[in-house]
Image 1 (cartoon, rainbow, N blue to C red):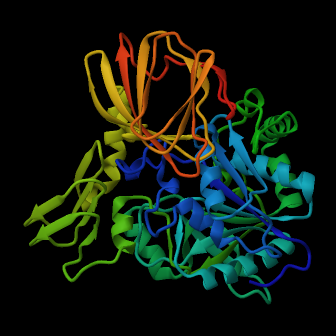
Image 2 (tube, rainbow, N blue to C red; image 1 turned 180 degrees about the vertical axis):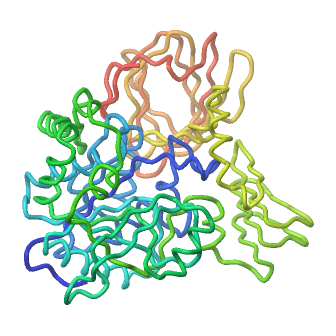
Length: 480
């Protein structure tokens, strides 16, 4: 990508989605952008690495919700990417308020900067073509355009919105004004779009001049901008995070940037791009980009198939076997199994809705639950007891806490633990244990250089995660 003589491009990575169409692998507490679905790195890491080029791109600004903040920070650290900021959206208000808040944050540092807005959960296979498209979009932005990326369509897709190209930009091949935004069409109309050659898929990626974006939003969305200005101006710094003010951010209309601005402004432009793009919107999408065998199957994990064709089978824990089936999605996790016809994969979100309706936790949490200090996973449970495996990262510590209804017995499997128990502090190593009675203040810490793994046995009349009273927490979590 060419160096920009008029300042850096500021990547804005939107990571607020829940990815329910990829359940059971994607859960609200650990959605698809945080998972390694298409490569060894997670989708978020791939997105951040795509724009990690000091001197060309500024450090990225991440927008996410509070529940994912520590996971996102850790994933960026693992790739040695220091973000400009991680801004926490206190409530979901769609993309327009998120982008507006990002523009206001960046305008404080560089009012003439260029924003490159990227969802965190897209796959882009052709990096060179992506960089060239970004160059073109930046050039269009510097001519005074609010630019979106239109993807060269490969088939009459009914799950995407479309963009009809207008007048070509002089001296800027691939860039054109936007003649029309079109909502998701039916099959017949989508086929007409493809045949005409005038339409591209709406990718949800954008390049905006910061000043122009703010001015246009002020004109078309004054209520939204008032809410976002108040929220940004009264935001608070919390460790490495920027907490937008909840009370004011919540007053913003919930609206997408397309509906809020792009369909209204006279300055909308589109850069047509053939970049190997996929929005990973369903299990079918993962099958499409996966490495298929001679029978058209994509398999991951421990999978044995016989006389199976055109299917996607993914095992996270146990053996999956199938015989004599066609066009299926089969996904196994530690606590759930999904089986669906390929052409009905989009209906997974209805399963998630049913889990929500019946108040089941599988729509939100995996069997392994991640915390800023590490993770825990249920091993066994019964009447008045449950057993968990706890992993604490090196240098991490749990909050100083107590429980009203349960006692805990900790057994160290690997590593070293420093345990605060009442007024005492003890050191435990492999195969040593301690008991925490009900009502006793306690804390667990890993002072070592390897993961601390232990087994926790809880017993008592109530074992819910909300039976925690926190007295001190290095991660800034509120008292439960």
